[in-house]
Image: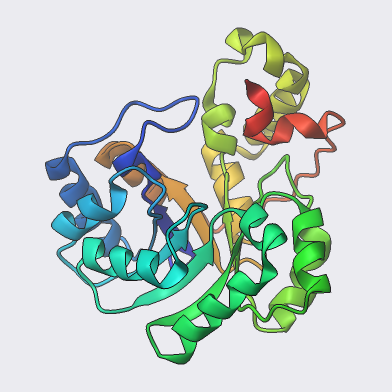
Length: 274
């Protein structure tokens, strides 16, 4: 379970196309306890996730490595970071990421504030949460030193794969989100919204592979990411304890080799689903 990371956006916001709703704080405590018992040692959050940081601050009862993020806004980086520490009830973070790339594009000098946080020992690793390889190309062109990257990656969306080996070799810790494409993989294939209908053939291909291997769709999608040698952390988000337990049980020592070439790549970004 060492690679699994518990995402916490659901603790502060209604999130995902297949969400069952935000859990109450008693449920969050149960989820966190089960995650720790199941070998999950890292939590992913952000001050942009509603009140998720406050909920975690009240509910965490065992030590975790915590990764949070700086969102776009007028608040200076150091002030927002200190606010996250206060809300979470911790003295330092494992990781702190720039949540919105456009902040860096508009003002690359903002990265100096992240470097200062790391230099004073308040955070172990700093980096970026990205959506598109063009953003990574821009960052690399600016020679901004970073040692943490969070990106979308799943069975259908592998646009960052060409960069992974080199970044991993340079010591960059790579975490991936959207393992289940924000719940799309679990939607009824016959009831997809019209906008997502072009993805139906690919989902059926995923279903066929899962049947052939005697696995569930979740097992295929999750283990494909877990088995990637360049991925250090695989985010999973849950609405309840049962979902967490199902994810933990989905971790299998079964090779997954599935290559699906999606032509409608714009639909792999949930921003384009509306």
